[in-house]
Image (cartoon, rainbow, N blue to C red):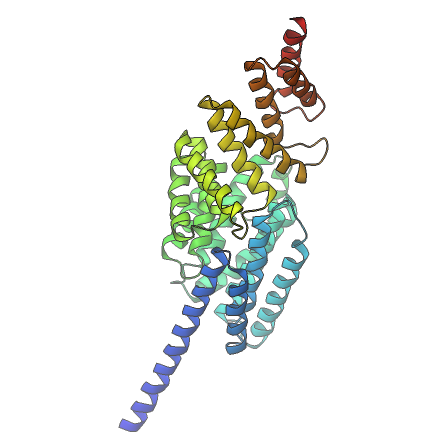
Length: 379
């Protein structure tokens, strides 16, 4: 009897050790992704696949590497199909596991998560109907996982994202509203609470929940104070993640904390100069240069501001399409023109205002340029 008990104890210890090893390796790989250490993360999750081939986590998080490549360079859609294909691989593996055991919690969770992230990219690309359909498909799968493992806080991420989006997006996009009668109703407050449950109690999904909460408080809830709470948590955990760092800076701008914004965006440019991974993307550089230049302009340091606004324009032109110039580019030209006018550089101001009239009208930029040109040419 003692021998049997000892064998059971040793077997249980072995199972616990495997689970502990699995959890620690997955958590380490997740941190590597958020730290933008993609090569290391891929090695970690390849080893997870090798040692735990029946578990879908390894393949799922390898797909998450591509998700973060997309977030680093959102104007580049070249990773989209690769990401979709990797998610399909996860879904296929989960379906095989569910054929053998329909109550496989891990298979349900990662299948639902894969469909959910497919929907997130579709929402990111403003393919709202397909995104909503993915949400509708993922929801019962995640609900089944939650019913089988009610203590799993990671599943709350999927519930939270669906509940929030389903409540908010139809109001933001009126054309979608009639179609939502075919989908379960959303609940914004419930969605926020579910996301918070994951953000502070989740095992694998807490950082993603914090990221989502940061963006929704900024974009939809118009609460930059709470958005900054999550941005600060993320930046403290992952100080060299350019996405988190940019968000900290832009939230600071909205809060009117221009000292912090200037510090953050100067740090972004410094890391870009030092070739930190992910910091040399044009979309990152133009935003950082714009806000540093704007702070210098507001402090009367016009010569220095000019350098940064010109850099903003150069980076913007790498990714802006003709006729669809970004607000960063238009405003940079406008500020350069106004600064030239302030410094009595009439010809330069005229040239810049005329340039503004040749690009997209943004925030009444054409009206400002036309009125300024009338005054300059009158004198």
